[in-house]
Length: 233
Image (cartoon, rainbow, N blue to C red; front, side, top):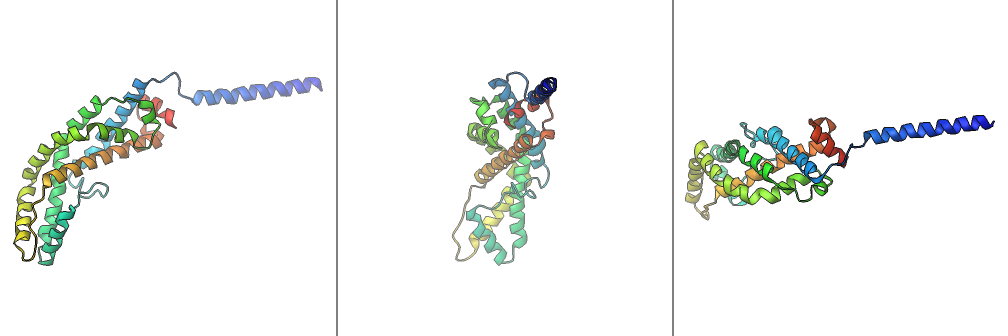
């Protein structure tokens, strides 16, 4: 009887040790420091640019993506309605489309700016960002780069307006609207508006990929991503 008890106890101990070792084997090996975590976060943001932001540069990348489609600012909604009311719906439709075309063209030109911004970002507390919300790294990138990127992005948007003919179309739209009776003249800064909306769209799509990497193991396609994001699982 005594021998049976010892045998059962030994079996239990070895069984428990095996289960414990299995748990240990699933844990991230070694100590991951702040700099390695920061490198993993940068890599995730880079993948967001490569996989998601690149979609914005295609025809209809903004216009047919409901997450980032640029709509009219409040000031121009009355312009849109008034023109449609007098039978100029086609012109109004084209006006909305070219705003998105300008953003698509500009993001294509500006992608290297976003890549450089990610390379240059310093994560002061990378671990807290890693363990934060599904878009914590993108939010951090936004807070650290938005002002500087606006200054670089704005002239690219202005050039794209000219390139896709948006400046001429909107000049015609606004001229026609301002000529209508009983309307108050408008003179919106569309370059500023589209710059802000395009930047917002870029950060939105980077966040899409960040969330995918955080929640989908198969999206962690490098050893670095696997090691770093295992800490937040």
